[in-house]
Image: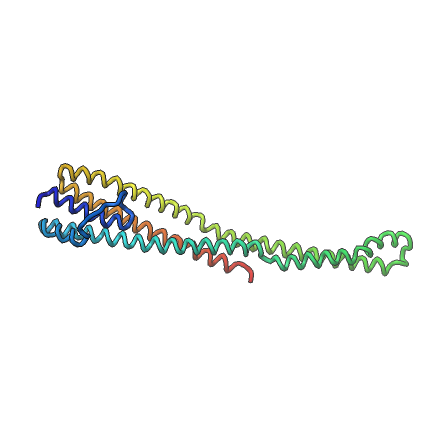
Length: 255
């Protein structure tokens, strides 16, 4: 078989596979299925080239399958992380809300209950002196009770603020991980762009024809696909780290 025909078969094989994983820029209609095209290619090349093409193609398939699996897992855990974070933010807003509401209600009731006594105690003391000792003593006890309730409310609010600060400090640990995720996604995008650009060099190799350049292109595509697969696996790992942080943060929310 002539070199030109061999190169076309190589290119066709890759495009069929690439299209199935959304790597090809345009759809390519081929009459021959992938396996048939590979069989034809193997029978028309020397053993060394046959082994090389077979190895690169298998690596390409493996990389794309791994990338697809990792992307699916990363997307799933990312969705769960978003849900967990949304629920956690709601729980943060509700930290000790019932306790504080009850203390505020108790304080308001005490103020309303003691208001007549507190308002009357000062003028009575001025008018009758020691004769209203019992009234002033009761007023003092009332003030102490109100102050105690105010202190309890302040303590509850301080505890709430401290708890929220602690939870948010834990959540802040996700910030550098999100930066890494952004960088990984950028790298994936760049490598996909390189895959597209590599196709142009392959077209030139076909026109010459240049079997060596075509093989180099296949090797480059296999390498880039491997990098994409690794980067998507890294995305999954990073999302797992965020998930672990969310679990720790949730554990800090009061029951």
